[in-house]
Length: 390
Image 1: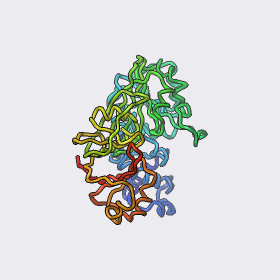
Image 2 (image 1 turned 90 degrees about the vertical axis):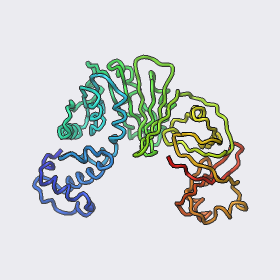
Image 3 (image 1 turned 135 degrees about the vertical axis):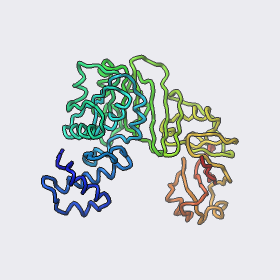
Image 4 (image 1 turned 30 degrees about the horizontal axis):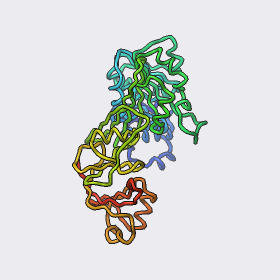
């Protein structure tokens, strides 16, 4: 961490060049003693990234930004704020502190927060930024697992990363560092609440086979893109595991929760008057039977993750009114589809959106929504819809 980057004249230059092409800027000579142009470019690009992902950091003076990869891997303020509501007590240890976004929000709920980080530079950056943000967090440059050997906390938070040597293999928690599967009992001996963040790529059933004492699983999506899986683990064993889906958008918050089950039975129906497409968090959960029962809807087919009903219901996802349904046959379809302007989606269909748009000369946009899909009798269908606004 080069503290000369924090000098007022350097910070002024960074702020004045937020919209400058850094690809050209990096070849220019720095006018500041002790600060290379590549360091200035790193700060400019970091601050740009922070504008949407970390607005509090962006608005705060003299924040130091790490390399691009660290910014990409860190939690957003949106997800950090959400997970801070899942913990309680007086003390928390963040064992994989990183840039400190999660620690910052934990400190809003927990009196004493410890930020452990093995990367010395990241630890220094986090300590400096916490000072600028005016929060009191204990930053410790040490391996978190080792550091807590003789300590206890009300909560422990850990965000293991996937090891590079398992690239291309099935994603398992035991393939990550720190290895929470190996250290699970060790961690639970030192806290009342253990919160684990994992990649959305992790299979939920596989995670449950590796972990014990899971009480809740939170699937967090932002603007319909799943960002995190959160595993809440407590010492008290519970036979029922709550799975909660959250889709956070600028104007809406969609939630759905149910008990987790490994196998489901569900009833099916051909498209009725209304069509529903679950949001990404619900899709990740796979809890379709509970979803259907809760909202009184039916699924189109086993592998067609669309739902339907005769009466309009509230639903965690997009809602549509069906205007017509046609079999996917060229003779009867060409006059309705050829050359129209529409929004195309496929669900359990053998062709891609791009190939369908090319085949039928469909242009993007308009008020018509076309779902190319398959019903429970294995019939290929095109469902013409109008989107229902929230």
